View 1 (cartoon, rainbow, N blue to C red):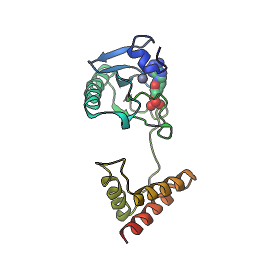
View 2: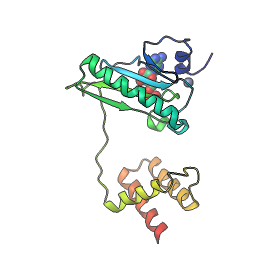
View 3: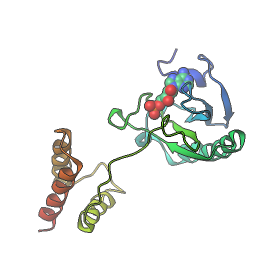
Length: 181
Ligand code: AMP
Ligand code: ZN
């Protein structure tokens, strides 16, 4: 028997309240309903996270997610809706089988559902440096050059040392300057 709870649901070995399915994707109710209308959409294949997801499977999962979102909205007369998706422990992933959360939202439900992050509006140069760094690795995420890897490690080290995001971005700007200079 699989150790993965979502694989067990796919295989019919664990209970689930199924909403819909396609050849390669399954939608079922999350056991946790902070507000009514929290559905998970998964690939039937065991795919750990976004990094392991191929485009075709991702497209099938997302197509089902769109249909589920419209059905949740209609069925529950939701006032709004969120899509959420978590990767790795730091990204607050708890079940390591890729899943989209479809979460109905209702006016006045913010005591039950908390989404948010602290505002930080960096200078354009810092935004440009981030865009340049991320964009340069779009086609080759595994081939970060030595300069890039060193920069990423420094950014990671600074941040995991529990520094504020402002400081992380300052390091990024410094790395971008030293790379271009
Ligand atoms: P995440 O934290 O993004 O990995 O989300 C995992 C989700 O899976 C949580 O919302 C859990 O409530 C949900 N979950 C865990 N076990 C089950 C289960 N057996 N059936 C349905 N949902 C589950
Ligand atoms: Zn699985």
